[in-house]
Length: 177
Ligand SMILES: [Zn+2]
Ligand SMILES: [Zn+2]
Image 1 (cartoon, helix red, strand yellow):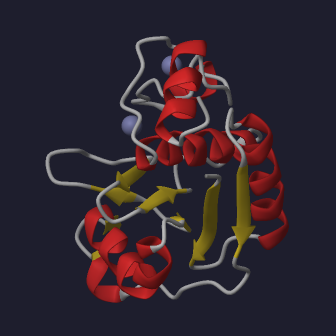
Image 2: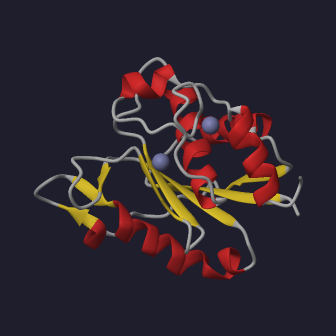
């Protein structure tokens, strides 16, 4: 069984950047994967936007993508929305991303990742949320892409790489080991 991922821009996200992220994600995964970019962005629904905080409610946005793609996720496709903006969930000031493994859907938020290392940060966050969608939890190895990041410095401190333990777990989860 191989992993199929759809990268879905939510709002304007550069398509060439997303294609390069898709290639890097395939290279970094320790399992066979196909990552497709939908170049047509989804317009972010206004009712998932918090006008006081100027942030998206990440769980609501995941629900919106699930509504659009439940036919795909029902057959095992993992959908990752790359959102032009910032996101949060209750009790957290912000999230870099949020995975809903039960829905097969995740979102990654670009607002706090921008800068010279934007592309590589985006790759790490997509890999991290995809790891969650495939069943991985957080990792205590700070270099591993499955370590939890509280700041962009921590994102920069980890690598677009699954440690040996997470790689083995991932191969077992998808049935390659
Ligand atoms: Zn996480
Ligand atoms: Zn790890």
